[in-house]
Amino acid sequence: MIDALERFARDFPAGSVLFEEGQPGDYMYVVLAGEVEIRRQVGETERVLAVLPPGEFFGEMAILNGRPRSATAVVRTGARLLVIEGRTFEAMLRARPEIALRIIKSLATRLESANQHVELLLLPSANHRVVQCMRHMAEEQMTLAGAQFNAGTAILVPKRIEDIAGRVGLPVHEVIDVVDRLRSARLVLLAEDAGIEGDGFIVPEVGRLLEFLEFLNLKDRFGG
Ligand code: CMP
Image (cartoon, rainbow, N blue to C red):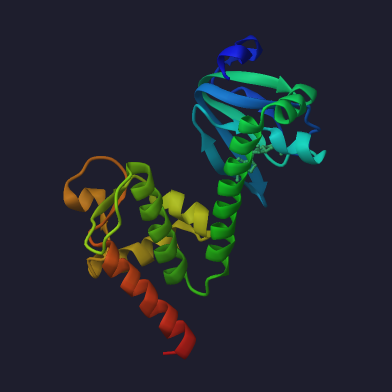
């Protein structure tokens, strides 16, 4: 499919703002090479909602629902993108069910992750939010690695404390407090604790983290 669309391809340098939140939108984009950040203003700060690698698309929502852009798109590393006009996009969806199906699947995945996000924000304590978020991140990492889950699985998740804080809507220092308690209980290690270079955390036994989450849920339900 991509070959036939090569005539729509354009190169963009790092830092190019493709469009901004609130603008009307007439084009959708497919990432051929490089990465694009999707950012959204939340209060005073701009949050990164997603970093889209090659194969991903964006900018379809304004075309499909006729609303202003729901977020800002900025090229992170120099990128090659297909830039497809709204009318062409709609014609493609009508003519090519396999493209429509792919888009629907991606939107379902995005909805699932938005639901997880809402669930995190509704959890009652910082402990809850951070542990549940680490669990989601570990599961995402296992899916990426095509790994089978079992209770004894150890998993390295290359995410920073700031990434966790952004997802759970807590200040970084509160996340550090929770992570320090999890480290004392050996439920979680930081990559540096294990002599691994770079950012990230390790769940040495996924099963124990899930048990701890269950314990938090019970504590929340029955008090104490
Ligand atoms: P649109 O609203 O046209 O412009 C912003 C685009 O960002 C939007 O279409 C989607 O393609 C994309 N987008 C919005 N929210 C997310 C998200 N949570 N994850 C990935 N992409 C998103």
